[in-house]
Each structure stands twice: as C-alpha cells, then as structure tokens.
Amino acid sequence: MQAHGVLTAEKTSDQLFYEDAAGGFTFCLNSDLTFSYTEHGTWAGGTGQFTGASGSFDAVGTGKFLVTGTKAGVFGGFGQFTNTVTGTLVESK
Image (cartoon, rainbow, N blue to C red):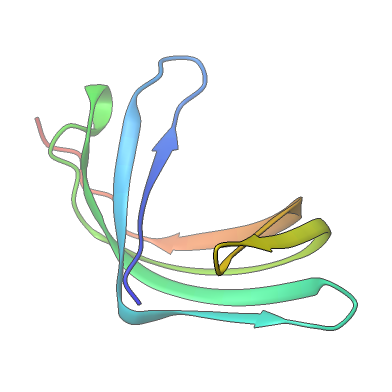
C-alpha cells in the first residue's frame, strides 16, 4: 500500500504534501477499537511556504475510533489520535 496525504496550516492555508513509502505504513486495530501505527515517508512539495519542500519523516501514533463502518469494501472511522513525527523538512522555493 502506498498513501498520499496533505497537511494544511490553519492560519495560512499553506499545504504540505507527503507520501508514505511502499510498505512504510503499519496499522494495528484492536477489538476495543483502539489502534496504533507506524509510518515512514517523504515530504513531496506543497503550496505557499511549503513549495518545493522535501525530506523524510517517521511517525508513530495511537488512538481510538468512536465510530467505524464499511461501504463498498472500504473501511472508515471517526475518532481521536495522537502522533509524533520526527525527520527533516527542507523548505525551498
């Protein structure tokens, strides 16, 4: 699995794009709807202050789903999580 995502700065609306490395995301869901994950990926540009951003990151997180479900074979949920990201973010315009 390879995932792509976007982080958006609330005050400026600048966006930072990221890509998880192939095989770089591990997700564990427990029967009580708690979960944990690890992630490795790269920063892949963005908008505003993040235009041309590059670098790599590692993340770990935990959380709990309050509601889950599936539709057409796709799993989704709503809940809370906490994560920690470490790595290097190089901003270049």
